[in-house]
Amino acid sequence: MIKALIFDLDGTIIDTETAWFVSFRQAYEKYGVNLTLDLYSQCIGTNLNNFDPYEYLITEMKLPIDRKQFRQSIKLRYSQLMEKEKVRLGILEYLEAARTSGIKIGLASSSSREWVDKYLDQLGIRHYFECIRTSDDVENVKPDPELYLQTLECLGVKAEEAIAIEDSPNGSLAAAAAGMHCIVTPNEITKSLEFDPAFYRVDNLIDIDFGILISELFTKKTDLKA
Image 1 (cartoon, rainbow, N blue to C red):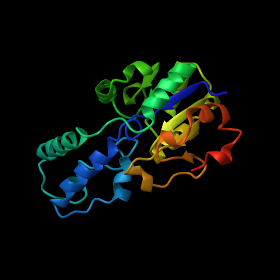
Image 2: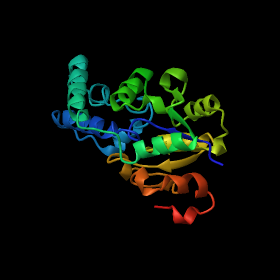
Image 3: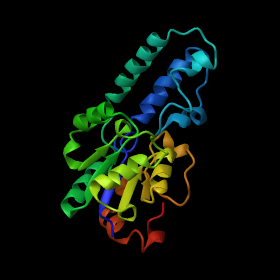
């Protein structure tokens, strides 16, 4: 029996990832460098340890760039692009349906609490979440399962009683490592990345009826595959 839904934030609830990629790609183009999605994807849904797009042109390409100015220009362009972004399709319907049905709702994000709070308040959806865990709460972010394990404990549910809603390979791997079920809803950037075919994948949550997801997902799998 499903007792909880645990959402990722970036790229899942609101598409923060496309704007970042566009901002970095445009900045790289000014220096004659093509930022590929394969390279950039190393930092999607996790930290910047594997690939730091702020530092790459300086440390790897050896270009004479002012770090502070470069960061400021990226963040300015990002803010301009994010002014147009709203909550993704199906998210509000799922949040309301879960609350009405008595399903617990959590959030597990590799971003900082400050970042998470900013967008939850901007979208006006903070009140839906009974438990929120961010990079401030763990030693290791996704694809490590620590964020999900902490959220499960906070909600008081077992892994097999919860479904993770994710958009990235790193996020879905974290959910799987925690022993959870996972629905993958990629955005414009992550839809071209490689996911484990075992995960359910849909363009948006509106493509899966909430009632079917909660009550029939594990008995009628073939009816739900995208």
